[in-house]
Length: 101
Image (spheres, rainbow, N blue to C red):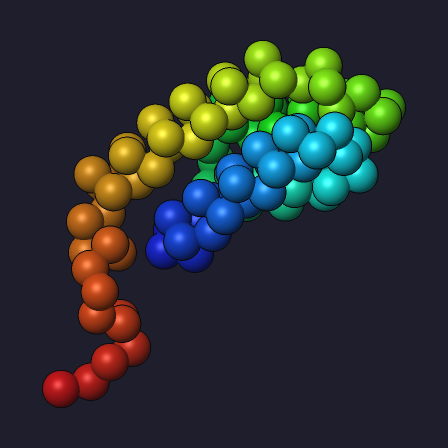
């Protein structure tokens, strides 16, 4: 799950940024919802809470007002990913944990 989070989060953040730049509330809501769920699964509660706020604002059709929250989201996501890499260095290795020698 950690590997999946580390692999997917940059794409989710990019989707959030693109939706914000395009003032696309529905895409922003969907991307924030996905990140909220994956962050919650890893108990990254601050990240999940920020994503939840963005999801709610976007759900109200207010994508443009979420810019400050998105800046906080990016910073918190970077902090969480750095911490996960520190705590689980074996997860960030290129080899698959299922590979047999």
